Image 1: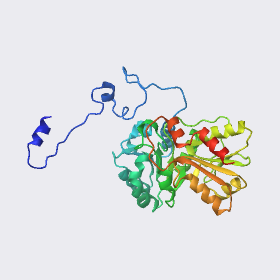
Image 2: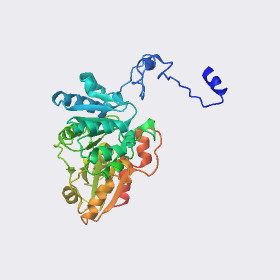
Image 3: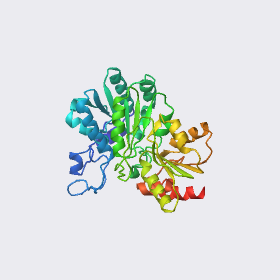
Image 4: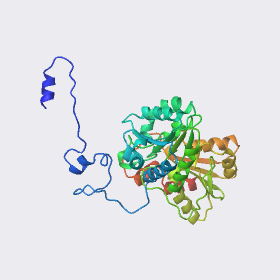
Length: 360
């Protein structure tokens, strides 16, 4: 207060430097500010998280897998922009503290640093929230993709993130990355595919964007876990009249819609894209020929998204069908729980089924 009163009495510019203390007034947060940066339910007396039983998160699987990979590949390093805990890089840091680099809130520098490391033979995994990777767009193009460097961009929290709202939804990543040459774009539907794609990325000598969601990784025990083949989609069921093409973790809703339609007597084709770039035109065109309705499902902007990639392949191969693109609309999505936001955006299973049936 004194500093403000003093500044008010000056007739020249004044800089007031305020040292903030994260979590001030709540002891558990003061002692562990990183943990409380973004927090779900917790016990207010102890500060301990209240975890519900469920699958591991994509972030946990990423962090554990990267730490395991680093044990056998000495070239692997992790780069963070002030979010080591949030992106799971703390697990790598626990084992190899000298191989994790936190550049602070400077995503542009994180990507350029990774480019320099890659030129030197290092294999950098840059773990950044999808929404913040937008800050480094120029660096992705000029420092990484233009030089075709083997940098792995790990886009955590791709898609809707719920209560963090429009500043944190990973809405635009698929759209702004699709147009960049040399860049492989992979979207896992579950934890198995995330691990497989990380290992593909490890062995590629070119740039990779690996996009996965916040929260629990998908788990589909009744679907055979077939090998992830570079550039190839997974054809889960071959049916008739209706085809559902899903990109990434939103497979959760696509699969529910598929099962609802099956229960009503339909026999839809179900395709898990796995890749946005490269995506086998031959496999996709053969799989999508002869349908009345093709529904593409993604949890990203419908403008420039995965659905447009599928539609382009169909047009180039003279495939005629009604294409329904399910994705996030051309506006900023508000705060809310995930289920509600998916209903609002029309990408929940019920909305998918209803719209497909209306267009048959």
